[in-house]
Length: 178
Image (cartoon, rainbow, N blue to C red):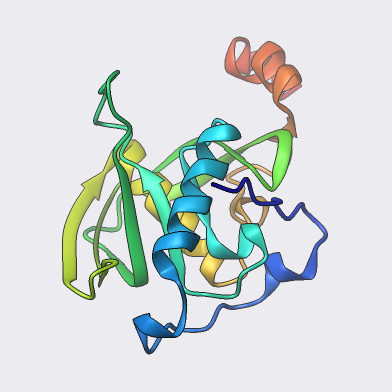
């Protein structure tokens, strides 16, 4: 087990498009995914993309927020993912990022998406997601393209330290816009 160092806002690895993984046997992907999983859990995250741990691979992991199992944490792996919106309907909600610790922003995302990818065994996987599950996949997918959530803010003023966002935006949205 290894807890990996998480790249922080400002590091160039976070703004570069990642490389597709053409041959699964070129890397020890099981070890990478295991170490990324340990890192994500240690940092109390819900998702983690390879660039966030200084790897330029098209791969991310995430926990499906719709599955609440106290006994076991189920982590999904998407390699070379492709995502598409199911409809044009969007929703604004608050996001944070392990690479931008202590900060939150109001981000606009598609409500429903479909995705396809390869799993660790080289099998094709696909599915649909909505709500928070769709938001997590879109957030992590953006990392693979060098995009941070700060470039998708629904309101440029709705970004700041999480504790201030809790006080002034989430609880008193009317006061925040003044």
